[in-house]
Length: 185
Length: 192
Image 1 (cartoon, one colour):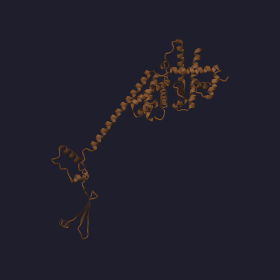
Image 2 (cartoon, each protein chain N blue to C red):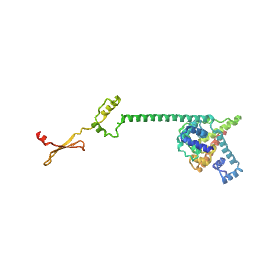
Image 3 (tube, rainbow over the protein chains, first blue to last red):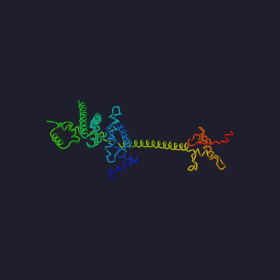
Image 4 (cartoon, rainbow over the protein chains, first blue to last red):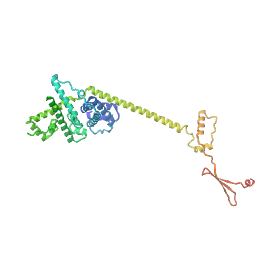
C-alpha cells in the first residue's frame, strides 16, 4: 500500500472512531507537529502542550476533514493556529537560554561559544518578529514548504507570503547585525 | 553602483526568486562584494536557525504521544461512563412508566369487552373460590381504582299531556342519549 493510500486509510478508520488508527496518525505526524510547535513557540514545554492540544483537536475535528484534500496543509494550519493561541495565552518573557538548548558542537571552545551566541541571537530575532512573519519564516525556511504551501497553511496569498518572508529575513539580519555591532564596540 | 535591495536579496537567499530577476542579481553579485557579504549574512542566519531549531528529541516525541493517548483514554472513559449513566436512566424511566401506566395485565377478553365502566356496571366483581390469592388482590385493587360512573340521575321531568290518550312523563337523564318516557297507569294514578 502506498503512503498516501495508507494515510487515507488511516484517516478513514480514525474518522470512524478507530482509536488504534488514530494512534498511528499521531505516530506518523508527531515529529512534524512538535517540531513546528517548538520553532514557533521557542519553548519546549509550551510546544509539548501545544502538540498535545493539536492531536486532541485533530481527534475531535477529524470528521470535518475532507478526504480528497491534502492532510499535511490542514495539519500545519491547525498547528499554527493552536501555537498562536498558546503564545497569546503566555504572558511572560521567553527564557530562551533554557528553552532551546544548542546541540553539541565542535570541540573548539571559542568557536562553539561564538556560534552559540549567534544562534541565540538568531532565535531571539525570530522571536521578535510579528506573528505572521514568524510563521512564514518557520514554514518556509525551517519546514521547507513552498510559498504556495505556506500560503495554503496560513490562508493568505502567495504574494503576501513572499512579502512576509522577505521582511522577516531582513529583520532577523538587522537584529543580529545590530547586536554584533554593539558587542564589537 | 546600485546595490540589490535587501528585501530582494533576502528572497534570493532563500531561493524565492525566478527567471529574469534571479539572473540579474546573480550578475550583480559577481561584481559586488558588499551584496555578497549581505547574502552571506542572510544565509548564515538561516543555517543558525536550522541548526538551533533542529527538532524534537525522541523523549519529547514520546512524551507527546503518551500525553495524547492518556487524554484520549480519559475522554473515552468519561464518555463510556456517561453512556452507562444514560442507559441506567432510560431503563429506570421505562420500568417506572410500565409500573405507573400498566399496573396489571389487560383483561384476556379485552378485544370483545365493552368499555370498562359499562363492564363494571353490568358485571360486578364476584370473587370465586377458583381465583388465586395474587390474582384476587390484583382484581380487588383494579376494582377500587376503576372510576365509578356518575349515577344516571334524573335531570328533568315533564308531563306530556295527550288528548284522549294516556299521560306520559318525560324524564331526561345525565346521559343525553337516555330519555325515559313513562306512561302513567291511569288506574294506579286514580287510586293514588
